[in-house]
Amino acid sequence: MIFFSFGNRVFNKEYSESNIYMVVARKDRYTDPIDFLNKAVSFIDEKVYPGEDFKADYEGMYLKDGEYRDIVERWILSMDKSVEIKMDDILNIRRIKCDSSDPYRDEYVLETKDEYIMFLWSTTA
Image (tube, rainbow, N blue to C red; front, side, top):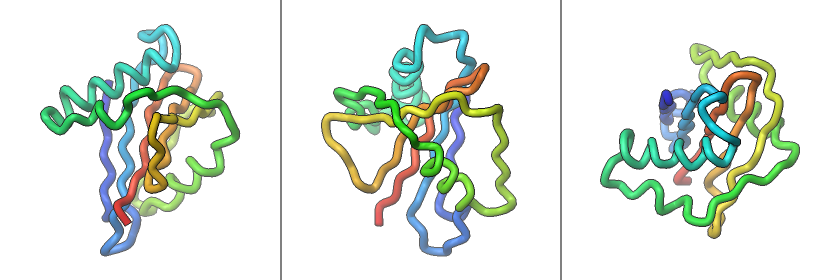
């Protein structure tokens, strides 16, 4: 797995509190998208932010199918022009849902031909 973090400066707003986190992994290593999601959350919890109990925010998580392409593209396109994200055609986008919802977060699992991508956008404002 590979973790990417894009902080507030990537949104061209000096005082923005938005972030994008992405975890990317080869699709053939997981049985399905929920298997990938569980392991991506564990990866962030254990390797990226150990001791911060990242996993607790994802209690009762599940994936919901829907039409989310416009939302994901909006967050990617709002990033600084010096940040360029290109990927294979997105075959499916599933929204990550949890027991408690947070209006300051948009979270998805993107699926391309060869990869799963955990895509998390959040803000504190």
